[in-house]
Image (cartoon, rainbow, N blue to C red; front, side, top):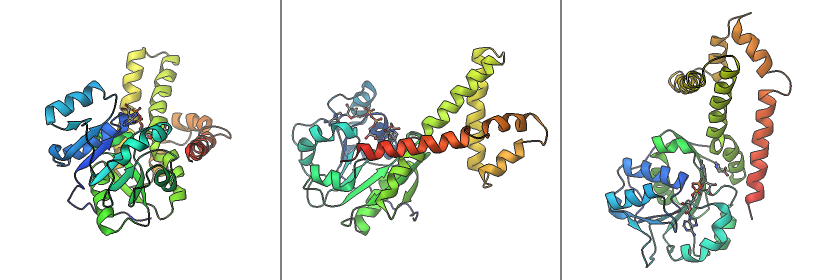
Length: 276
Ligand SMILES: NC(=O)C1=CN([C@@H]2O[C@H](COP(=O)(O)OP(=O)(O)OC[C@H]3O[C@@H](n4cnc5c(N)ncnc54)[C@H](O)[C@@H]3O)[C@@H](O)[C@H]2O)C=CC1
Ligand SMILES: O=C(O)[C@@H]1CCC=N1
């Protein structure tokens, strides 16, 4: 696994097919990173009001009638709609089009079967913090992805945060389970902490505020401090103190570490089920 430096040029014209929660997050990162709005086309039969407004404001093309081969086609649709979407999306692909897919589970072979014109395909798994440039993305390219296509993909992906290139496509389902779905686990932690605070007698609003600031602050510290997460945890934990009492519950057999392993395995298994 390697990490690359961000090169400069976006592959254009760029077509984003599926501008939902994740596609829109990536789009905002590209525009913030300097992608020319005039080089962007959005294809989405049901664009959200925010996307429609963004297209109007920044003069992005939305659902044009005619399709022609793009520099890059980014697939932001759900895996379950790939079959019905593929025929229309194929019209955006020429021999030099870089196809970038964020679809959970769908392998490069699955994509090529639906999009026979596709040559260079990069399968990626981003995550939602991409919307603020703090994403974590795993990426793997098909054999046709040469240095130029890889540099184009790197530009697209690095505007949303960390990019880790994988040598083995088989690892991307595990990446999906860890960092693709991972933000939801952290948001659940904030929800559960807030609920536990209410059970301990805090007013709901105060508890939610404290839980949110705690998760956000701990995340920011994790980012700012190079020490391992385990060390930061130990720094909070006074021997015989309150944190040790809580962690004895959270870390006992069958509790958080075991549950996290089970959860990640379930997500990875589901990604496998979405393939084909
Ligand atoms: N939401 C997340 O945190 C992450 C999602 N993903 C992947 O991103 C993809 C999209 O997920 P979300 O953004 O959450 O879903 P979403 O439902 O918010 O977005 C999907 C978009 O695709 C559009 N769409 C439906 N049919 C289409 C068609 N035929 N052509 C073009 N657009 C079409 C929908 O109108 C919608 O705007 C999925 O494949 C998912 O696995 C990957 C990483 C994280
Ligand atoms: O839940 C999902 O299937 C997608 C992939 C990773 C995050 N959301």
